[in-house]
Length: 202
Image (cartoon, rainbow, N blue to C red):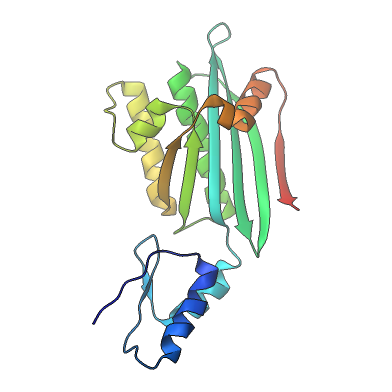
């Protein structure tokens, strides 16, 4: 007979695996993650040692704001992740020019956030992405078509970067109130205040 479990946290996996092995009735056991990769128990133990040194449980928030009068764009991003059993938060913003509208500003913010994940060395990880732009997240998720040439370029760049760092994204459209950290950072960039912090969360 074959059995398959529902998903549960990585750090609990070996507990369940060992409980099953102790029954003496398990002939073969395969551990499969959200990315579709699979391991034996021995391989998974080694993988866990490696994963402790890499960022995981990633939550990414992004926001972009386009100022029509100045034609400037403010972008803000907040990233939460865990590493070595410790929680971290990254807050950054930037001021950009040469963009044409608010949707491009949102795409630029998301692309900027993904590039920071690349800097962190994130790879082969699930990543939850939160933003208040229905256009960006629905186009990225394939639910809405993308007809504008400018947005199509940003969509392609974003998809290319996601494939390059091999992350599995879950996309979440949230209200502006729930995205206030990234929104504030984008507004601060437009006001000329730069923010760049990377802190441990106690």
